[in-house]
Every structure is written in C-alpha cells, then in structure tokens.
Image 1 (cartoon, rainbow, N blue to C red):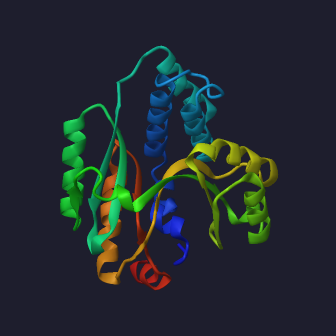
Image 2 (cartoon, rainbow, N blue to C red; image 1 turned 90 degrees about the vertical axis):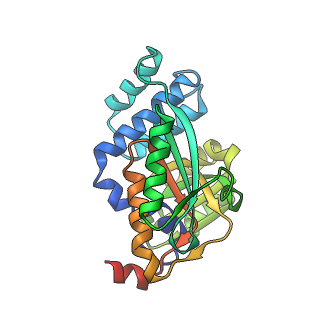
Image 3 (tube, helix red, strand yellow; image 1 turned 30 degrees about the vertical axis):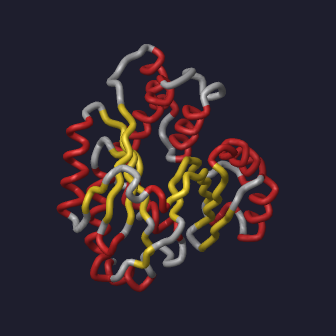
Length: 247
C-alpha cells in the first residue's frame, strides 16, 4: 500500500478481500439481486444493476453466478434486503461510513455497535460523519493500463473530475451522475477497469499514528467481515513507515 495512494488507504488492503473470495461473491450477489428487484432485471435498462454487474465482472465473479442473482430477483425469490448506512468514528478520530444490505436491522445494528466498541471506536448518529465526504463515481485501473500521462489524458477526454496515479494503479473520480458515461469512454481507450462503483470521497484525510493503526485495521476487518456489510469507507491515511511497521 503506497503511503500517498488515498484510495488504497481508504478502501483498505484489497489483498485481504481477495482471500475472502466466497464472502465477496456472496455480497456481490446480494447487491445484484437487490438492484434487479429495484428496477428492470436488464442491466441496459437499470443503471444500478449495470453498476453491480460491472463491479462483479471486475472482481472476476463467474457469469453463471451473476445470472443466478438476476434470475432470483426476476422470480421474486430470496430475502428482501434493506439498505442502511452506518456512521462512526475509529481510533485516532477517523471517520467511517459503512454501507449495508440487511434482512434484520436489529442484528446488523448490534453487530456494527459491537465492532466499533471492541476496536477503539464508537457508532455515531446518521449524518455525523457523512458531511465530511462527497458522493462520487470511482473507476479503478491497474498500473498496467498506461502511464500517468496516458491515463490523465484519457480521463480528461472522458469528462472525469480527478485522477490519482501511483505505482499501485490509477484512481479516477467522476461526478456521480456521469459515472457510467465516463467509464464507458475510458474502457474504449484503456480497456476493462478493475472496478466501477459509487464511492464516498473524504474532503480531508487523517494521518493515523502507529499506535492507532493496528486497532483501526482490526476495526475495518471486523466491519468488512460482517455478512451484511457491502462497503466500508474512511478518511484515513497510512504512511509507508506505519504500514512497514505493521507488516
């Protein structure tokens, strides 16, 4: 994880998620089913479903799994999930947003409260930290997609708002409303992205000291391990020195 790669720090150790592939596919399937139930079961006619399917493909989810999730929605099968956003604070005053899909609000709320309290944080009221973030579109590319200049030029032509490039890859931010159009334009030039999603981008980030970093990462792991949690966002930065110490 590069110390100045904001997205790699914000989303937290992509490699850890790769080790939990089955759980990740389950969460992706849940999002696809909910998206399909919320509108047409056709990705071309349903922007949210298209986004969910694209994200699943970017994570190498098998096509059969994707289709099964859509078919489940078409047949009105499976549980009915409620979308809930939790907000809280982690060690060092880090602001955290958790997005969940749950069929049992009480269970999920208890799990969130427990995860925060056991790992140096506390759950806050809705809206307590969201004001420090902006809802944006996010597109990820590996470093192999091109050098910084090539990606920047492609992003400008596609209508993106900002680009962050490092040795880990390229993070491209767009207006929420134009995510699909920008992603399609970039794909024509740079190829298939690693990820296309809606994100919470922090206005300001917090440098986390070594003493708080280990506890913060335990909190993020605890939240991400919950079956109901879809994504976890935070406004933290971890330096190369701190990450080296933790490793």
